[in-house]
Amino acid sequence: MDHRPRRRILGLVAVLLGQFMLVLDATVVHVALPSIQGDLGLTPGELTWINSSYLIAFGGLLLLFGRLGDNFGRRRIFVVGVAAFTVASILCGLAPGPVSLICARFAQGIGAAAASSVILAIIATEFPLPADRATAMSGYMFVSVSGGSLGLFVGGLLTQTLGWHWIFWINVPVGAVAIYGVLRHLAPDARRVARAPVDVVGAVLVTGAAMAAIYGLVEAGHTSVTAPAVRIALAIALTLLVLFVAVESQHPNALLPLRILRIRSLVLTSVVRGFMAMGLFGVFFLATLDMSGTLGMSPLEVGLGFLPQTLTVAALSLGGSARLARRFGPVRVLVGGLALAALGLAGMAMLPLHEPYFPLRPLLHVVLGLGFGSAFLPLLTLAMADVPPADAGLGSAIVNLSMQLAAAVSTALLVTAATFRTRDLAESGTPLADAVVGGYRFGYAVAVAGVLVGLTLALRLRSVSPRAST
Image (cartoon, rainbow, N blue to C red; front, side, top):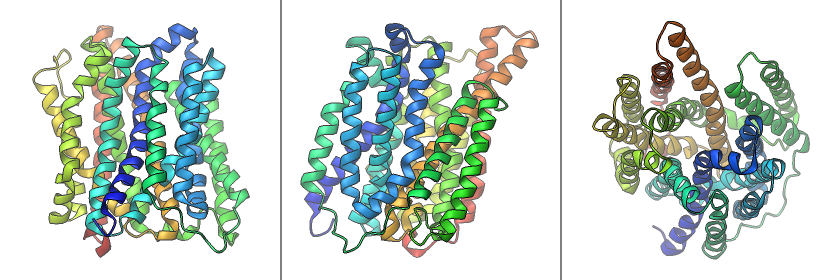
């Protein structure tokens, strides 16, 4: 790609291996939850906290680690994050009870926040040329989009053959290889003559706000959006956010310089990404429930059921999406991808109640793969195009935070919508099994609406900088 092609490619592979481990872990754990519950005797509340503790630490610390990466070195923060995640994975697998497992999952979230907050910044700075960066982003797109569906298969395989402990222990060799590859093939972080002091007050406020917001949104998915715990958590988050903005506007070395929020492409693509995530997480959440519950498929079969979507994304990540963006421009490809994703979700929403897997579902998963696979790369390219190199870590963290917040919001919204529709159908005399499937279909319809909102906002990205569309 440039004067050090082999070293940079190997460094990229190592970084993407770390990203793949983080994405894979998210869905691997979902598949293993029933086995973990049965083995450790977890209550339903304790079971939900296995994921909630991870999400709160992950989303809450992204901005802090993103800025720390800008100040102290992105390679250093990535290595520390992957090492922490790997050690926490060992502790998860050894956990003898619910409290130790929940604490280890929280530690995993800290490591994941550190590593993932700087990945896009590393790619953006290591591959400054637009064509090289698009190719590198294609790899990031593949592991981010396909890793989730592969996690369902890997999780089912490990849980059924070796036991749930191995969904965590498998991270150990992967993490070790990623750390070795980054240390060997990525150039050391450039030394800075003077480092700005860390904005401690801003860090505490934004971390508290993000953690409170994610806690409230996750809790809303399990209870109700009007539950006292949800309202109190969101009120605290809003209060801390207001205080954070007030502090940052006066701080000379702000954790989140307000100037970065004036980067139109970064902010707008983050909002679009959030609405696209509603469709993406809607597919993983609803299709998994639909295939396992309605069709009686095992975890392995569910993972295979996502294979058409995974292979389609893989094909696009091999250069197809980058070529489309170069030929037609990232905005047009983004709009077309979101339109295809909405079409695929609409098809899912209109499936008959007892529709078998073949032949319609594989076709719809291909359409969804084309849609999400086409939209993901332009969103990344546009988001990072105008971020100054000195703020690349913070920009990378904002991109990841938008996905984490969207995951929590989407899950809460889709659970509420599906539950409401199921209850309405059951009360009108529909058999409960059919009412549940009807709830899934309604959840897809809500996801379609979200993607269409994202598509509408994407049309406002017409006036992008030349760098982004090269």
